[in-house]
Image 1 (cartoon, rainbow, N blue to C red):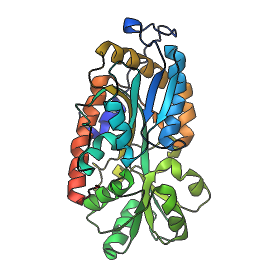
Image 2 (tube, rainbow, N blue to C red):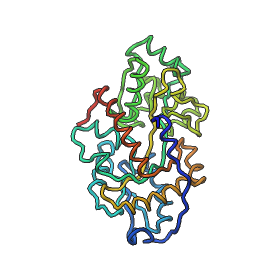
Image 3 (cartoon, one colour):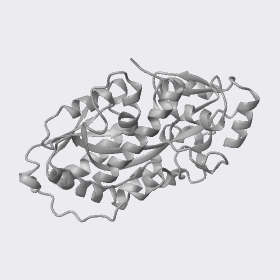
Image 4 (tube, helix red, strand yellow):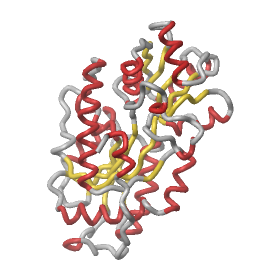
Length: 327
Protein backbone atom coordinates (compact mmCIF):
# COMPACT_ATOMS: atom_id res chain seq x y z
CA UNK A 1 0.00 0.00 0.00
CA UNK A 2 1.34 3.39 -0.95
CA UNK A 3 2.52 5.62 1.92
CA UNK A 4 0.43 8.57 0.78
CA UNK A 5 -2.87 6.75 1.44
CA UNK A 6 -1.78 4.43 4.24
CA UNK A 7 -2.39 6.67 7.25
CA UNK A 8 -5.95 7.41 6.29
CA UNK A 9 -6.69 3.76 5.44
CA UNK A 10 -5.86 2.38 8.88
CA UNK A 11 -9.22 3.40 10.32
CA UNK A 12 -11.05 0.28 11.39
CA UNK A 13 -14.69 -0.42 12.11
CA UNK A 14 -15.43 0.66 15.69
CA UNK A 15 -15.33 -2.11 18.27
CA UNK A 16 -17.82 -2.21 21.11
CA UNK A 17 -16.63 -1.58 24.67
CA UNK A 18 -17.39 -4.62 26.78
CA UNK A 19 -17.05 -3.04 30.22
CA UNK A 20 -15.88 -0.05 32.19
CA UNK A 21 -14.84 -1.87 35.35
CA UNK A 22 -11.31 -1.83 36.75
CA UNK A 23 -9.49 -5.11 36.39
CA UNK A 24 -11.72 -6.55 33.66
CA UNK A 25 -8.73 -6.96 31.34
CA UNK A 26 -6.38 -9.93 31.01
CA UNK A 27 -5.08 -11.15 34.36
CA UNK A 28 -7.09 -8.54 36.24
CA UNK A 29 -5.46 -5.64 34.37
CA UNK A 30 -5.50 -2.77 35.18
CA UNK A 31 -5.29 -3.10 38.95
CA UNK A 32 -3.85 0.37 39.62
CA UNK A 33 -3.62 3.78 37.88
CA UNK A 34 -2.03 3.83 34.44
CA UNK A 35 0.77 6.34 33.84
CA UNK A 36 0.79 7.93 30.38
CA UNK A 37 4.15 9.54 29.65
CA UNK A 38 3.84 12.61 27.43
CA UNK A 39 7.35 13.59 26.30
CA UNK A 40 6.59 17.32 26.05
CA UNK A 41 5.65 20.19 28.34
CA UNK A 42 2.16 20.57 29.74
CA UNK A 43 -0.08 22.95 27.82
CA UNK A 44 1.19 22.22 24.33
CA UNK A 45 -0.81 20.60 21.53
CA UNK A 46 0.53 17.10 22.26
CA UNK A 47 -0.27 17.41 25.95
CA UNK A 48 -3.79 18.68 25.28
CA UNK A 49 -4.54 15.80 22.91
CA UNK A 50 -3.18 13.33 25.46
CA UNK A 51 -5.33 14.73 28.28
CA UNK A 52 -8.54 14.58 26.26
CA UNK A 53 -7.83 10.98 25.29
CA UNK A 54 -6.67 9.98 28.80
CA UNK A 55 -9.89 11.17 30.38
CA UNK A 56 -11.97 9.00 28.07
CA UNK A 57 -9.64 6.02 28.46
CA UNK A 58 -9.88 6.32 32.25
CA UNK A 59 -13.65 6.01 32.03
CA UNK A 60 -13.35 2.98 29.75
CA UNK A 61 -10.86 0.93 31.79
CA UNK A 62 -12.04 1.93 35.24
CA UNK A 63 -8.70 3.25 36.47
CA UNK A 64 -7.19 6.76 36.39
CA UNK A 65 -4.88 7.46 33.47
CA UNK A 66 -2.37 9.92 34.90
CA UNK A 67 -0.37 12.22 32.62
CA UNK A 68 3.38 12.32 33.33
CA UNK A 69 5.05 15.13 31.35
CA UNK A 70 8.70 14.25 30.69
CA UNK A 71 9.97 16.98 28.36
CA UNK A 72 13.44 17.36 26.90
CA UNK A 73 15.64 16.44 23.93
CA UNK A 74 12.77 16.67 21.46
CA UNK A 75 10.77 14.05 23.34
CA UNK A 76 13.63 11.58 23.73
CA UNK A 77 13.76 11.83 27.54
CA UNK A 78 10.15 10.75 27.88
CA UNK A 79 10.60 7.96 25.34
CA UNK A 80 13.63 6.66 27.23
CA UNK A 81 11.65 6.63 30.49
CA UNK A 82 8.81 4.69 28.88
CA UNK A 83 11.16 2.17 27.27
CA UNK A 84 12.72 1.42 30.67
CA UNK A 85 9.40 1.13 32.55
CA UNK A 86 7.94 -2.16 33.86
CA UNK A 87 6.32 -4.22 31.12
CA UNK A 88 2.98 -4.62 32.91
CA UNK A 89 0.85 -2.17 30.93
CA UNK A 90 0.68 0.37 33.74
CA UNK A 91 3.14 2.74 32.01
CA UNK A 92 2.45 3.84 28.45
CA UNK A 93 3.98 6.35 26.04
CA UNK A 94 2.01 8.91 24.07
CA UNK A 95 4.34 9.63 21.18
CA UNK A 96 4.50 11.99 18.25
CA UNK A 97 5.78 11.02 14.83
CA UNK A 98 9.03 12.90 15.45
CA UNK A 99 9.96 11.05 18.64
CA UNK A 100 9.81 7.68 16.90
CA UNK A 101 10.90 8.45 13.34
CA UNK A 102 13.10 11.58 13.40
CA UNK A 103 14.91 11.56 16.75
CA UNK A 104 16.67 8.20 16.30
CA UNK A 105 18.52 9.65 13.27
CA UNK A 106 18.88 13.13 14.71
CA UNK A 107 20.57 12.35 18.03
CA UNK A 108 23.94 10.61 18.17
CA UNK A 109 23.28 8.05 20.88
CA UNK A 110 19.55 7.59 21.51
CA UNK A 111 18.79 5.31 24.44
CA UNK A 112 15.75 3.79 22.80
CA UNK A 113 14.97 2.14 19.48
CA UNK A 114 11.66 3.00 17.77
CA UNK A 115 11.14 -0.62 16.71
CA UNK A 116 12.64 -2.80 19.44
CA UNK A 117 11.96 -0.66 22.54
CA UNK A 118 8.16 -0.47 22.23
CA UNK A 119 5.03 -2.45 21.51
CA UNK A 120 2.73 -0.23 19.42
CA UNK A 121 -0.83 -0.12 20.75
CA UNK A 122 -2.76 2.21 18.43
CA UNK A 123 -2.58 5.37 16.39
CA UNK A 124 -4.90 7.99 17.89
CA UNK A 125 -4.55 11.38 16.18
CA UNK A 126 -3.22 12.93 12.99
CA UNK A 127 -2.71 16.55 12.08
CA UNK A 128 -0.54 18.44 9.65
CA UNK A 129 1.99 21.17 9.40
CA UNK A 130 0.82 24.21 7.51
CA UNK A 131 2.87 26.28 5.08
CA UNK A 132 2.07 29.90 5.84
CA UNK A 133 3.63 33.08 4.48
CA UNK A 134 3.60 36.67 5.61
CA UNK A 135 1.04 38.57 3.49
CA UNK A 136 3.88 40.76 2.17
CA UNK A 137 5.22 37.75 0.26
CA UNK A 138 4.13 37.93 -3.36
CA UNK A 139 2.91 34.34 -3.62
CA UNK A 140 -0.64 33.08 -3.26
CA UNK A 141 0.01 29.43 -4.07
CA UNK A 142 2.75 26.85 -3.65
CA UNK A 143 3.56 27.08 -7.37
CA UNK A 144 3.98 30.85 -7.13
CA UNK A 145 6.17 30.47 -4.04
CA UNK A 146 8.41 27.99 -5.85
CA UNK A 147 8.76 30.39 -8.78
CA UNK A 148 9.58 33.25 -6.41
CA UNK A 149 12.16 31.17 -4.54
CA UNK A 150 13.84 30.14 -7.78
CA UNK A 151 14.11 33.78 -8.81
CA UNK A 152 15.76 34.71 -5.50
CA UNK A 153 17.88 31.71 -4.43
CA UNK A 154 19.01 31.72 -0.81
CA UNK A 155 17.05 34.89 -0.04
CA UNK A 156 13.62 33.81 1.20
CA UNK A 157 13.71 32.58 4.80
CA UNK A 158 11.66 30.06 6.72
CA UNK A 159 11.51 29.72 10.48
CA UNK A 160 11.26 26.51 12.44
CA UNK A 161 10.74 25.40 16.03
CA UNK A 162 14.35 24.24 16.10
CA UNK A 163 16.91 22.14 14.25
CA UNK A 164 15.60 18.69 13.46
CA UNK A 165 11.96 19.42 14.34
CA UNK A 166 9.19 18.46 11.95
CA UNK A 167 8.82 22.14 11.04
CA UNK A 168 12.49 22.27 10.03
CA UNK A 169 12.40 19.00 8.10
CA UNK A 170 9.16 19.99 6.37
CA UNK A 171 11.13 22.90 4.91
CA UNK A 172 14.08 20.70 4.01
CA UNK A 173 11.75 18.28 2.21
CA UNK A 174 10.12 21.22 0.42
CA UNK A 175 13.51 22.46 -0.79
CA UNK A 176 14.46 18.99 -1.98
CA UNK A 177 11.24 18.43 -3.91
CA UNK A 178 11.03 21.97 -5.35
CA UNK A 179 14.77 22.23 -6.00
CA UNK A 180 14.97 25.65 -4.36
CA UNK A 181 17.31 27.20 -1.81
CA UNK A 182 15.69 28.79 1.26
CA UNK A 183 17.36 30.26 4.33
CA UNK A 184 16.52 28.25 7.46
CA UNK A 185 16.20 30.26 10.68
CA UNK A 186 15.71 28.00 13.74
CA UNK A 187 14.07 29.29 16.93
CA UNK A 188 13.59 27.75 20.36
CA UNK A 189 10.00 26.75 19.72
CA UNK A 190 7.19 27.96 17.49
CA UNK A 191 6.16 30.86 19.74
CA UNK A 192 9.67 32.32 19.70
CA UNK A 193 9.67 32.70 15.93
CA UNK A 194 6.12 33.95 15.53
CA UNK A 195 6.83 37.70 16.09
CA UNK A 196 9.40 37.74 13.27
CA UNK A 197 7.02 35.88 10.97
CA UNK A 198 4.17 38.28 11.72
CA UNK A 199 6.39 41.32 11.23
CA UNK A 200 7.72 40.09 7.89
CA UNK A 201 11.34 39.62 8.97
CA UNK A 202 10.76 35.94 8.18
CA UNK A 203 8.87 35.17 4.98
CA UNK A 204 7.36 31.76 5.81
CA UNK A 205 7.17 28.79 8.12
CA UNK A 206 6.01 25.18 8.23
CA UNK A 207 4.45 24.29 11.57
CA UNK A 208 1.46 22.67 13.25
CA UNK A 209 -1.73 24.00 11.70
CA UNK A 210 -3.46 24.68 15.02
CA UNK A 211 -0.79 27.29 15.88
CA UNK A 212 -1.97 29.63 13.13
CA UNK A 213 -5.77 29.44 12.99
CA UNK A 214 -6.36 32.77 14.76
CA UNK A 215 -3.64 34.61 12.81
CA UNK A 216 -5.07 33.38 9.51
CA UNK A 217 -8.58 34.49 10.47
CA UNK A 218 -7.17 37.93 11.34
CA UNK A 219 -5.44 38.19 7.95
CA UNK A 220 -1.98 38.32 9.53
CA UNK A 221 -0.77 35.17 7.77
CA UNK A 222 -1.63 33.58 4.44
CA UNK A 223 -1.96 29.77 4.29
CA UNK A 224 -0.67 28.15 1.11
CA UNK A 225 -0.92 24.44 1.85
CA UNK A 226 -1.20 21.74 4.47
CA UNK A 227 1.69 19.29 4.42
CA UNK A 228 -0.45 16.15 4.75
CA UNK A 229 -1.61 14.27 1.68
CA UNK A 230 -5.22 15.25 2.26
CA UNK A 231 -6.86 18.53 3.20
CA UNK A 232 -7.81 19.06 6.82
CA UNK A 233 -11.53 19.12 7.60
CA UNK A 234 -11.03 22.27 9.67
CA UNK A 235 -9.29 24.04 6.75
CA UNK A 236 -10.95 22.47 3.75
CA UNK A 237 -10.30 25.57 1.64
CA UNK A 238 -6.51 25.17 2.04
CA UNK A 239 -5.05 22.74 -0.52
CA UNK A 240 -2.73 19.89 0.33
CA UNK A 241 0.84 20.36 -0.84
CA UNK A 242 0.41 17.21 -2.93
CA UNK A 243 -2.13 19.00 -5.13
CA UNK A 244 0.65 21.15 -6.60
CA UNK A 245 2.27 19.65 -9.73
CA UNK A 246 5.59 18.07 -8.79
CA UNK A 247 4.61 17.55 -5.13
CA UNK A 248 2.52 14.38 -5.45
CA UNK A 249 4.72 12.46 -3.01
CA UNK A 250 5.20 15.29 -0.50
CA UNK A 251 3.76 14.20 2.84
CA UNK A 252 4.35 15.39 6.40
CA UNK A 253 1.49 13.87 8.36
CA UNK A 254 1.95 14.42 12.07
CA UNK A 255 0.51 11.30 13.64
CA UNK A 256 0.40 10.44 17.33
CA UNK A 257 -0.20 7.18 19.13
CA UNK A 258 0.04 5.07 22.26
CA UNK A 259 2.80 2.52 22.86
CA UNK A 260 3.76 0.16 25.69
CA UNK A 261 7.28 -0.94 26.65
CA UNK A 262 8.49 -3.84 24.51
CA UNK A 263 7.65 -7.15 26.14
CA UNK A 264 4.25 -6.05 27.41
CA UNK A 265 1.71 -8.88 27.20
CA UNK A 266 0.04 -9.02 23.76
CA UNK A 267 -3.28 -9.55 25.57
CA UNK A 268 -2.86 -6.23 27.41
CA UNK A 269 -1.89 -4.51 24.14
CA UNK A 270 -5.03 -5.88 22.46
CA UNK A 271 -7.20 -4.86 25.42
CA UNK A 272 -5.93 -1.28 25.28
CA UNK A 273 -6.22 -1.23 21.50
CA UNK A 274 -9.90 -2.22 21.67
CA UNK A 275 -10.70 0.65 24.01
CA UNK A 276 -8.66 3.21 22.07
CA UNK A 277 -10.26 2.20 18.76
CA UNK A 278 -13.70 2.69 20.29
CA UNK A 279 -13.10 6.04 21.93
CA UNK A 280 -11.23 7.51 18.94
CA UNK A 281 -14.07 6.50 16.60
CA UNK A 282 -16.73 8.32 18.61
CA UNK A 283 -18.33 11.21 16.65
CA UNK A 284 -17.96 13.48 19.69
CA UNK A 285 -14.19 12.99 19.63
CA UNK A 286 -13.99 14.00 15.98
CA UNK A 287 -16.19 17.03 16.61
CA UNK A 288 -14.04 18.25 19.51
CA UNK A 289 -10.81 17.94 17.50
CA UNK A 290 -12.01 19.40 14.19
CA UNK A 291 -11.68 23.12 15.14
CA UNK A 292 -8.01 22.46 16.01
CA UNK A 293 -7.19 20.92 12.65
CA UNK A 294 -6.78 17.49 14.25
CA UNK A 295 -8.43 14.26 13.14
CA UNK A 296 -8.85 11.06 15.18
CA UNK A 297 -7.21 7.86 14.00
CA UNK A 298 -7.60 4.26 15.04
CA UNK A 299 -5.51 1.29 13.96
CA UNK A 300 -4.37 -2.18 14.87
CA UNK A 301 -0.99 -2.57 16.62
CA UNK A 302 0.41 -4.14 13.44
CA UNK A 303 -0.69 -1.23 11.27
CA UNK A 304 0.84 1.24 13.72
CA UNK A 305 4.13 -0.70 13.59
CA UNK A 306 4.10 -0.49 9.80
CA UNK A 307 3.60 3.30 9.87
CA UNK A 308 6.54 3.68 12.29
CA UNK A 309 8.85 1.64 10.09
CA UNK A 310 7.84 3.41 6.87
CA UNK A 311 8.30 6.88 8.34
CA UNK A 312 11.53 5.91 10.12
CA UNK A 313 13.10 5.07 6.76
CA UNK A 314 11.70 8.21 5.14
CA UNK A 315 12.90 10.68 7.79
CA UNK A 316 16.26 8.98 8.20
CA UNK A 317 16.94 9.82 4.55
CA UNK A 318 15.76 13.43 4.97
CA UNK A 319 17.91 13.98 8.09
CA UNK A 320 20.93 12.52 6.31
CA UNK A 321 20.41 14.65 3.20
CA UNK A 322 19.98 17.80 5.30
CA UNK A 323 23.10 16.93 7.35
CA UNK A 324 21.30 17.70 10.59
CA UNK A 325 22.46 16.28 13.91
CA UNK A 326 21.90 17.24 17.53
CA UNK A 327 24.31 16.34 20.33
